[in-house]
Length: 63
Image (cartoon, rainbow, N blue to C red; front, side):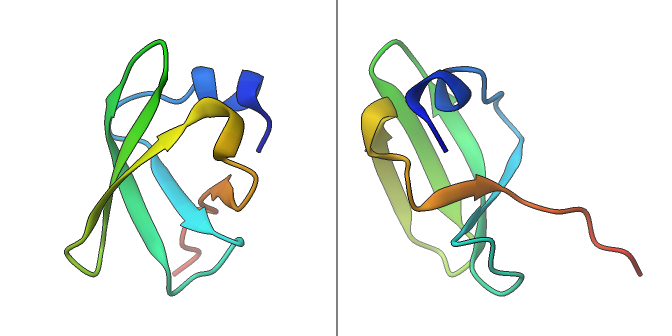
């Protein structure tokens, strides 16, 4: 995603690495510099807005 898209992410929003259904997480914090993602694998990671090219908004599960 672009930096502008990253800045619009909301806490609680689901995201995915490379649009993967298996590698997803939840936005847990957002500020002027970036977002923190709590990945489903238990890891936490901070991304600057301009480094979110590998992350996409997760697609809803169609179950």
